[in-house]
Amino acid sequence: MRISVIVCTYERSELLEKCVQSLLNLDYKDYEVIVVYGGAQDCSEEIIQKYDVIGIRQKEKSGLAVARNMGIEGSSGEIIAFIDDDATADNDWLTYLSMNYEDESIGAVGGKVYKGDTDETWFSGAAIDMFVKHYKIKIEDYSRKGIFPILNGCNMSFRRRVLEEIGSIDPYYTNAYDDTDPCIQIKKHGYNIVYEPKAIVRHYASYTGVTRSYLDYYLRKNRIYLCLKNFENIDIFNFMRDDIYQMVKDFKNITHRYKNPEATKGSCSLMERGFLYSIFKIVVSARIRGYMDGFSARKLRRKV
Image 1 (tube, rainbow, N blue to C red):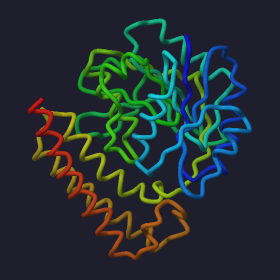
Image 2 (image 1 turned 180 degrees about the horizontal axis):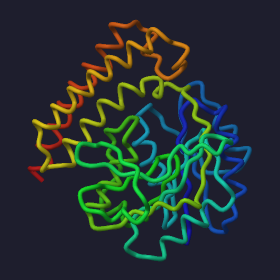
Image 3 (image 1 turned 90 degrees about the vertical axis):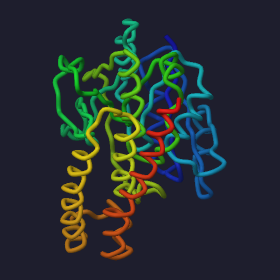
Image 4 (image 1 turned 120 degrees about the vertical axis):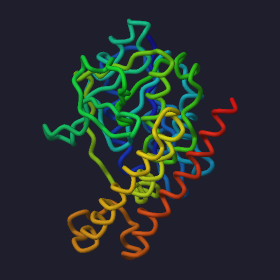
């Protein structure tokens, strides 16, 4: 079973080399490594040539989902696996992912993510409901009705024919929830999603990079979009009421960050623009855009 491993990076070549080195040491026979890269200041091409992996250059900064789709289009594997550029994989990562695909009902498989070299877990299986609230669940609960198992974009894989069936990853997701949306689609199409705890990736989370600096904005905007796009039966009134509660939490959060900048150093460069700008961009603007785009996507799906 051939596996294509895709790494998406943008002006973070200083992180990429360690990731590629770990991928070339995997204890798996039939696989390829593809790096989707871009940016005027990016040196990823030198790393690609040095390690003789496949490189696909983004001519324009189009976001993470578009980069993932470019990698998929340029791949040849039956299974498509993703890992972040600031992460490394254990030697048997692909071995444990691939074992689960012997069952044809499996559409996606993801593994455990540790915080760097520590024993602290970053991701160990989760699910969401129609309000996009996250739940920590056991492996045996992944088939439970009313919840949608999700995988972490730093350590996830998909069966190619299932991705082709659901369509490409929605290019709307510049950053955040680009890993969640395909999981929802896969579940809706009747396939199962597996969390494999023995497939391990170590994430050395870096908050550098052009897009990640606005992560707080994308998290709010894309959560609303994902919910309105994917869940036709959701009670909009209750969702918006819940979102108002989240707005209050965001306001308190930003206030705390602004007063204690060292506590969240590097987490969001929007904070550098000032308190009022941060409040408007994260609490207000992100939500307005999320609702506008979400209702547009909802309307478009009804026409199809």
